[in-house]
Length: 225
Image (cartoon, rainbow, N blue to C red; front, side):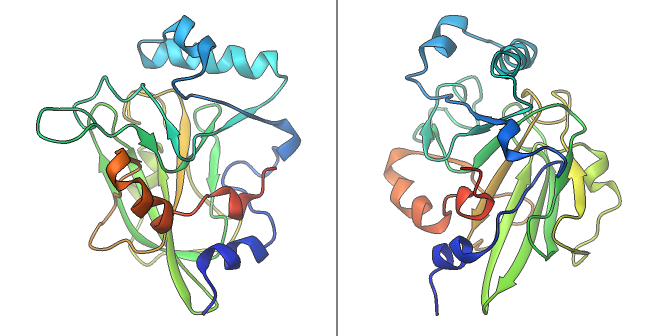
């Protein structure tokens, strides 16, 4: 059986947001601890961060900012989900973020069915989340879409089938998406274990090797660059 990474590499490019936005309108965005512009601007809430993203997109004449796979970030420190006295700090992002306007359509990048969905409420969490199940070349794997609108999961059912390119939801705003600037967290998962409507999207350094193996780079599928 082929490794999942090889299967993904062999597939044609796919999109997970509005198909009318071409990849030449995407710009990479570094949200790591080494981004001095981010350090200097110090956005402290969703509104300030949305302004930071908006200015960045305008300056780069782009519609979508993307990035974040295996990126160490400080922006999770505001939430006890990622940092508290009982767990090691989680600060390494293991999905790909696509930042653009609220209500932008979110698409299925491959044929798949709804594995599960959930509204993961709480500061810094996913908010409305959908997980799709896919099977290609006898390999079963999953894709996760976090920070969606509430409407995205209102009339959804487990087992619902979506064709590649079909709209599965839309980006939520900060009031519902965990208090973030609008974006989708897109993640590929090989073994989802017993998770339902949720899966870790941020890990600590001790678990990084496991998550690199279990959650391949989403750009293997999207092929933005």
